[in-house]
Image 1 (cartoon, helix red, strand yellow):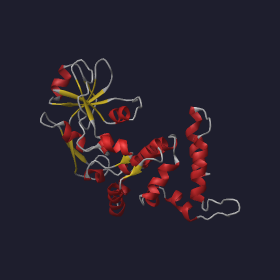
Image 2: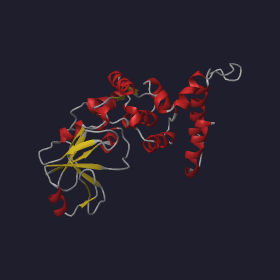
Image 3: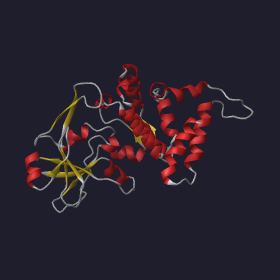
Image 4: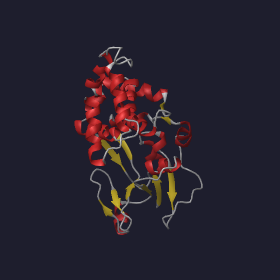
Length: 265
């Protein structure tokens, strides 16, 4: 039985950011062994456990295969023979597909990162790149890639190969599987990020804005008077408004409402 710190916590560590949440993957164990060790099972679709003392989430290493439509259209496989590299393969971006082993005393001793998809280099180069072609199986990943740019800033770029994959997803109609709830979850987070305009500019750049937010896409062709709006169109104007609003000193409980109002004004 081995335990690994994975995902966003490792990425944030590499970027010099204190992680808000820590997710762990357990390799070489079973549901029964985890419960025998005092973990509480909470995952319905696949085995996720809460640590009895620190409250962190621990998931058994798993693989995934799409066998249906929508968020729940996945078949997961977990057993003691699933390796950490197998688990990392199913993750969305290379920067989120890095692991660090955690030892029995719950300390991480970094000998080397487990980084089969070169996520460390992509962090250094500020590149958002899909981990594998399995990226296309979950359309919410298109929204997530846009949200990461809204969080990280304009220095970060989407890899050309990932753009091509997103173009294919748009043409195939898979983005139509997204529910309003999942779109709002990503949008509401992006509006609170430091660079909310990049969420929409990334979707425009990847040719998906017209599918996901047609009302916002319509602003691209809504020309403004050059005298009052030298930026040219209502989309560029709205993006400037989002940038300005994001810099305002707004109370936390009001910020989302103000940012949404800025988007739709």
